[in-house]
Image (cartoon, rainbow, N blue to C red; front, side, top):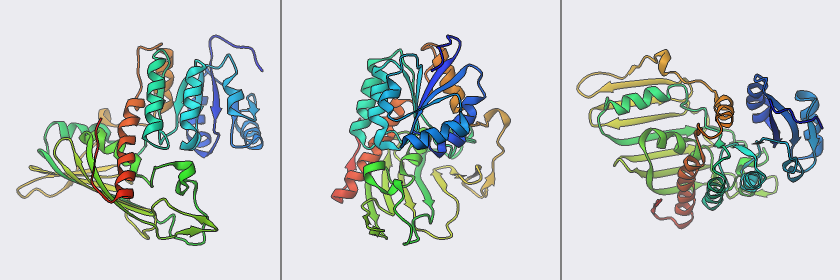
Length: 346
């Protein structure tokens, strides 16, 4: 193992899957002050393959607990599915490491709250969750239009997120369909709850209905819904209809429609085109996205800047943001299980 260089931020990766390899690692490697020191993955062989192909100077490790025991690591970068997030995060914080955690935050609300509590016990350590790329490009434009009351007071929100990935009955269950790996996270529910709450404020109650189209996949009994419909209310008084599906063929790109008492705003998540129109004759038109309002993916830069700031910068989404969307994920699961309206309390 190389000797510690005080001018480097030394990172240990836990979970070296596709998202780490294709998105996070290239961004991290653009920073000369970053050094990937060790990698643990689902198997030693996969960690060894990841290192040899991407970071040959790093040491592959059999167990994530052994990786956390390395005393000279500064950062733990978690790229595993949700079932490991809580244990690895809390252990990393207790070992004195900054933590970047892939989304979704956790298996359920209880785990998310445990992660938040641990982060508060170590306020000198930076914690950050990976944000969704959906809606990121025109995020500031949407916030500006809503803040300026361009469409007035929102009263109705309609979101659709459809895909056909789970339609083929011959395919095995994806890890996202396995509750023991993904927890209560269903389809893109948590992703879009995070986005909508960023734009419209907290969701305060839900009623959820779901359906499993393929009850068994190559011997695996599926209990995570293939499609999910959620009625919800927002703290600002708006009512929402959120529709998710993994079994809808030839579906259009994901989109949200926000209706206010003065007009309408829509966002196409496939094209990042924002459209808006005023009540009284004006049709929906594409809204220009000024360069100063355009946001790009700079997640890794934001996290590294926060670490280097020694606490002066706190990046988002943080664990507070994560608990906010996990409250809704938990409430949807509870509503679906009990077939009743569930109010969401902080």
